[in-house]
Length: 117
Image: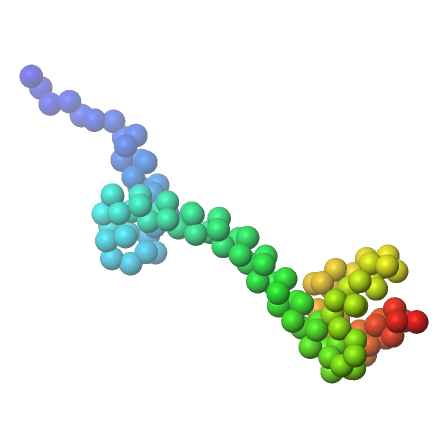
């Protein structure tokens, strides 16, 4: 029986996975079985860390806002600021408030003083 030449589909699949893991170290970018395992692991990590990144940024924004508010006056807290913002129906989210706190502290002081009144 003559030798049959196999198709290119499996090779094309492996090279596609190799391109994904080409920057990995050692056997993780060379051996087919470990390449597939590392690809699955990398995709799981990116999916998990997208949510974690959102959490971390929210914590960072809250910390920045709280630090600037406490510089102004220790009696006023972050939770009261957010509560008063919602009561006044001001649509400023934490990201915007943190940017204001970093770039222009006086503006954040003015916002907090207007809310207190």
